Image (cartoon, rainbow, N blue to C red; front, side, top):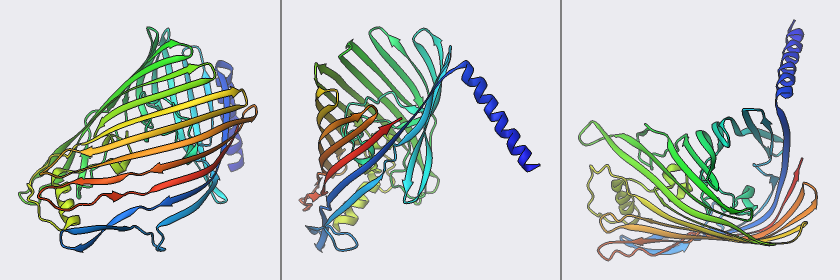
Length: 410
């Protein structure tokens, strides 16, 4: 009986797929990607207390007492995928599953799953999980699972659940979306988040010609952090307001191309637009952390519920040259600047830089070998302090990598 049930289920699924396939155009695809890279990471410097209120920079080491770590990355990239694009008369969609390996095992995850209703000529309503409107793929960087300078110079909103409208407007494409929010309690203990409205993103790409386009984008998100007031009872509430704006271009001049972009953020990490290392804290928590690290006792408003805003300027530039159909060259640089608002004379800032150089070699149709070298400078953490307190810069370290990505699309 169990075997008959399984057979009936398989027949039913096959029948549904057959009916769907006759009504729609199905295009199955896959991409297998291997990363083969050598890395060398300098762990930088950390602070060591010599006496109360005085610090010097010393070597930062791992559990094996190393200050430099060499490693080999030889693995199926996490963005290897299988999927399909489905096109119908008024409805189309796409699903895509990521495939990762761990030794002899592996995992499958949903990268994209959405449908589009084409309610008017050139316009569609998108429902599901997909790339958000602020994303423009400008960099071809392949290290770290095709990093592409994402959040390291290039604006990136991830693949998230959304309800979006996109379509042709004048000489370009407009995209507007209400998106699943990203939240963080900003290291506040015994807290929870309260979200009332979804994240908002919008972009417009102006196509000057087939070879040249410009784009503008922006986003906004807000949520509240709720925590217990341990002094007076009741509940503290603090709002975390995030916004961002950016401009960019994709310019091609025969075999050459240039792709720049610049964007600015307030509390961008709290909205998931930047990496978590750029998260700030409440004003109270920020000063208390400063006091704990530097052995000081800066006065602080112990009932403050305000968030210390973090500000980021991000920029990138990619240059390319494609002399033949089987060979392309690209160089890129990314920058992320970070600073916090000042509270009681204290603020921090950091400047991150990334560089890479690659060759894209097409061995056959759908077969690619992409050697690449790159360098990441994690910057120096600088602290502006009151009352002449000594706070030396902290070297955050660096990373050098060299190797190649191997890719076969099918």
